[in-house]
Image (cartoon, rainbow, N blue to C red):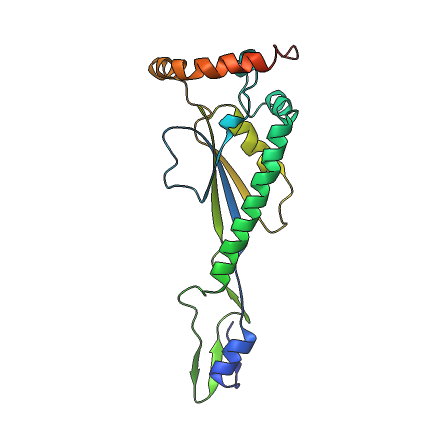
Length: 203
């Protein structure tokens, strides 16, 4: 319902309309290293620095598994990464919200006649919602990145935020050709992993 004010148009518009961005939307993607996300995300994080869970676990669980996530949460590097990424997301979202609040959405105009100012809606001008897309990748997008995204979404975010998760590759089967191509790259990492610790008997 329209309301009418007899205040001078310019001063009324400046003093009575409060520009605020809509509820922020955070979309968090898990994915394999290749191909990259399209369109590119606003923030990108590589989870390959986090050690993989044991092969016996990876063969029977993906990152959505509670046991898989619990195993990774026991690693201080994983939990530190969660806090670091959370902080970067909050800063980036704040920047997007401020950018939108400074530029009202097109189409919101006040029309007056003979000194009368007609403002559609209310004194708060509704603007578009800021959307922040975050990509989290690991080798294949099945385990570390999936668990990371699941746990990231479970962190405490501001009450008006909407959080969505997308697991791009978690249900994709690994092709034999891709396995052979990556086998050599994984061999060194696997040897280093063995040097770093033994088999996890909890699996």
